[in-house]
Length: 260
Image 1: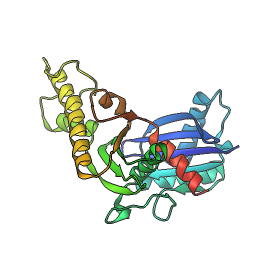
Image 2: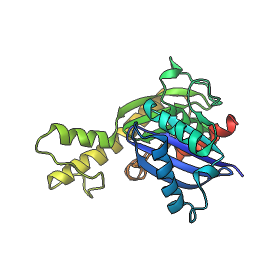
Image 3: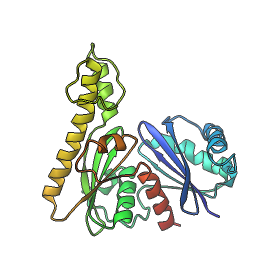
């Protein structure tokens, strides 16, 4: 039985998923810490596996394989130490030289974040058509895949939470707010007004960028969204057709199989 622990390290959150024979059985989201050690990961994973994987059926030593994608290079060291010391297995790190099965048409392929390639691979594997992947993270990104399964390029903008925090930090009278639907576009108080600008403003930005991308390509581009805020934004968008919050983890599982 294959027990694969897939880990996606983002600038804000680290998402982990346990696959048993290619089926995602449990997933977790942690705050990213680039200084966390392998022993600290072992303590966390012992607790998470005991809470979330059917009564502690799985232990770190029962994990048979591991794969990591990271946009925070210093965080990889602690994770590799965890797999080596506590699981006694090698770990695959997404980066140059890994088999993706997807040609990268970027001017410098090394500049493309690992998570963006993983998302593109997962989206194309699922739909087998030209697509646009919108990922709501620390940055909001749009990644474009051609009908031939090539990574064409993309767009990068500040993320929703990043923008909300910037307003709080740089406008002395504006509070820190939760990202949620205010109900109406025209807010009647400061919090509702900020929530409206963040939610409806980003939904409109997503739609505008997707429409501009579609106008530049000569094929129909299906739009799929991922990230923790994807369902919230998708509900206000007319271009997002599908959401999958676990898209990156599924992409990691696909890349693991391609490199097995």
